Amino acid sequence: MLQVGLNPYGLTYYLGLQGHGTPRANPEGRGLEGFIELAEEVGAKTLEIFEPWIARLDDGEVAALKARLASLGMTPVISSGLNHGPLDSAFRSAERLDAKLIRVCLTSVLCGDRNAWGEKWHELVRGVHAALALYAPRAEAEGRTLVIENHQDFTSDELVALCEEAGPAVGICYDTGNTLPVGEAPLDFTRRVAPWVRHVHLKDYNVQFTDEGFRLVRCAIGDGVVPFAEVLAILAEHHPTLTAVLEPGALDVRHVRLLTPDWWNGYAQRSARSLAACLLAARRNRLPDDADYRTPWERGEDGALVAYELDMIRRSVANMRSLGVMP
Image (tube, rainbow, N blue to C red; front, side, top):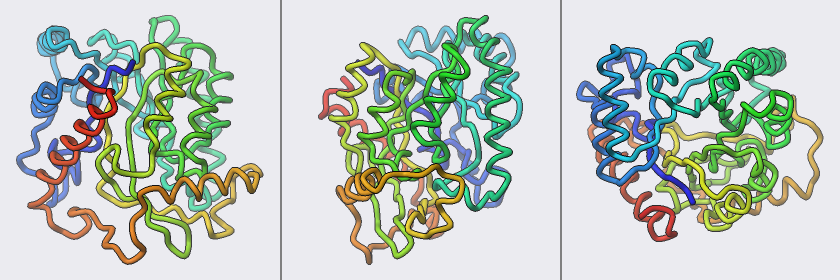
């Protein structure tokens, strides 16, 4: 059984996170308060909170937030990442809010494109190993779990190896939309990581094929490529309950250029059968080759973005309810 709620990353314009500090930022971004109000509207049971929001609150405000979430029946998850620096602030926020899970983005790599980082990719990997070795004992001592996300950077085998190396205080935050960016089919990826999953990002994409690979275009969760009924059935075999959050993709479309030879630099050898499964899975609900794949953000239609994001979240909720995932 999933305890489904929200995280902020599919609502970045509405919440004031998109283009922060630039002229295109939403001057009326709703921030933490708007986030909680929307979570109440959709009946959220989990709230994955952008960690800097907590860091800015004084102790009285955090205590009030903690009581409010408890009264609403929402489990808090702290959301942070190694790409933002040390995790000390995330640990402090988790302690203040009594959150048992800290979601951790491991790198800034996107679209599975290790080649774009050159030798720095290997430096990033070494840094991830060192950071988990440093923080896993602290998480275990505090009774928390670091949930490392497949953020379009690591394969299923690599994530499992990181968990096995770091020990029981490290699990996986499984983003269901981020298997194709590393050339893996959703069901293959799910079967491999399922025993280590501790938190779920419910994400979906429409795929548009290109001469270099394919684009991943955000869509309502359940309208795209991910076979959610099968994915969730696999997870249920291993976990009677999990926290999960709805997360439509980014406002910037992702282009996975895995049909180009250099894209594979930095990857281990992959079987043809595995890649074929990925390409076959990507054809589900795919976009026509000549469709306009751009989001309103990419088209410069900022005035349409709030309605675009909110409508997509509400349709995602409706789709998950039709699957029996949300009440």
